[in-house]
Length: 218
Length: 232
Image 1: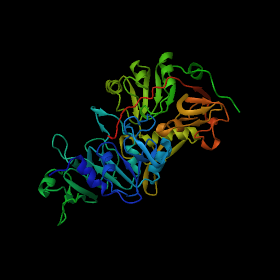
Image 2: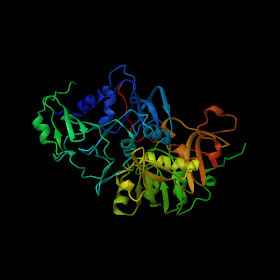
Image 3: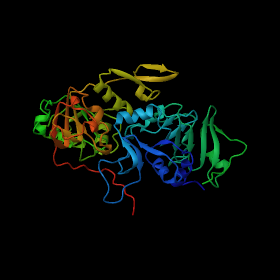
Image 4: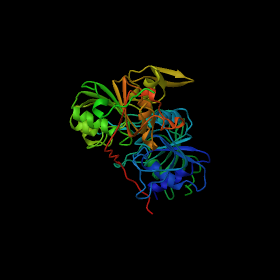
């Protein structure tokens, strides 16, 4: 069965390691925080100026001066710090942030990513996405394998304006976990109960299928 | 101490006029200079070029200036929360330059710090790189980006003293800090203006040297865009 959003987040959470500073994008990536192993020492960064971001506040404790990059009210954990936008992107550009998890509209087999603009339709802006993908060394994309029309989002080349070149390392979709190699998408794991044929049919870009492709362990 | 405080927002914004380039602090509605924005509406100046990470929402923040069509051009990184903005942009009434958020912040900071330009990898290979100098450093392509030039920067802090020293709260520091002293004249509004000596010099986020005018703001709404809660 294909994974739901929480399933995707749960699989990505397995990539979060001890001592990581992690930047979570808006949407499915935000959910990853809910699945990180208890007791694992990690800190979440939000590019609007906080390290040590905690869960949403209880009712009555929300603070207009304490939000994440999605403009949602959040809390600060003990040991958190606040800083300005310039320093925040210094952390990102300077590669102090260990892992970036973000959503995408399209990923190409060479690691290009498109997630900020649909010409003539949606022009909201790139926010911090271009800075993140240009500098992060470890980028995981969380997305659906196909779009609402059923078309593959894992392509030979992006059709939408790109956010960054050759930057995506790993992708977790509702169907599979894949890695970007020089030759294309390497199928690492299948979502529980999803066949290789289903994944193949949903992938437009070059798909490399190793002899064994285990199911995800969730 | 050099006294920077003025009695009200009208005095603080003296000299602001149509066709100027203005920097405005804040991220979403967090930390926006509410009093200065209200004064820009009252002054009814037009053809403004705004440098601001976001464009407010339809009925608050920079959305108030958009409603009255006072803005000629927006320089931002993300404008998704404002339907009127999207309408004016798609219809061509409003000129828009979208730039990566880190580049936006650094172009402010460069203006503040007297650095004319810098290289960054953000946007390389995308439409952002159009017309920009590309240079490789350690095998990685970077774009040359320039410091902003602006007439006024309008920022907001939590506390400030009459010498212009500022302290921010939470994530409201965002673009307010790098915009301090990044324009010809920097105006800071604060929730609490205190006499000199009341702020601990160890805890100052922005020293008063970057600030030209400071005033006590009033009637802060401090709206929340996305009220997200954990259920008890």
